[in-house]
Length: 420
Image (cartoon, rainbow, N blue to C red; front, side):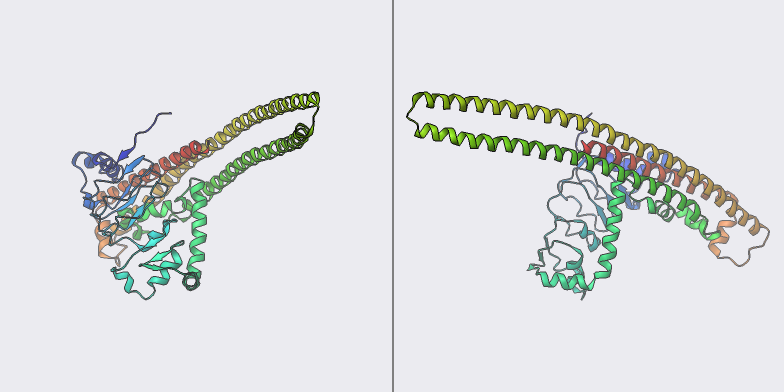
């Protein structure tokens, strides 16, 4: 396997990420002329083996997703004053720092840092909120010091009691997200919503004839979610069987070896007493000879057991690797077919949606639609512009599906590598 060199977020990485996220209709123009960083609202930098954050000073209005990298330190983000979301899960960050200037960062973001122990928000406007301290203590688990003050158990209990309903809902959501993440379908439930909500062209068209996607979306969600979670359960079961098999073998051999050592130790003590008390030279020589023979015999027996265990472990590991690889391949194959089916669903939806929009255009052209908003009237007055909007939203959705497919593939490959 080729080793990927650690990377720093540089101009090339930022340019590629920005262009990859561009509307397909203008992607070629974006590559030639570039995109104004100030107009970029989000950057996906997952799975790029990034070691260091840098060069994002020009991106003023931003959300950054940089999970599953090797980042060790939060740095070079002080100029991103409007940064609201910074996703850094599964990196190598040990200390929360250099975030003082991120005035737009949501406090709820800090709940993602499971090992956060000290937090100082003194001087920030949020400290004036009467619920500030209770909210922080309830939501940031493991906190030991807040604003230079030691956190006591009574304060935590009172805070959690105050937000108990929110915490229960949050914990359930975290469990579900963790399950989806493990099954490599994180974001599946919201993929279509995210795709449509971030599509400005679709938002312009939706009021013309809304509520057209529910059945199509749910079919994809239900099928992929059910299969992926089922396969994840099978992979977890395979991993559990492997660990159980190793542990059982270890316990059995440990028990056998300990019994042999105890017997040897007991017999050795008898021989040592003979050596200490006997005056008979022959008896002493025989005891020494017996002790040497028993020691050598024990060594051979323990070595034999060790070799047997090693062989058993090798067989078990090979079987596990084969089965786990098959599971990963199965998930990957079904994922590919599911994304292909999703493209079909998108095609079906687009055809039906386009038909409904053009039907409304025909009605508008005949004068059947009088009581409509001026913005919709402007859209329906130009058929070419209307068809351009439909084409652009179609290409944007295709690109979004492809990005999610690539993410799933990368996560499955990473899971297979980490399993060994």
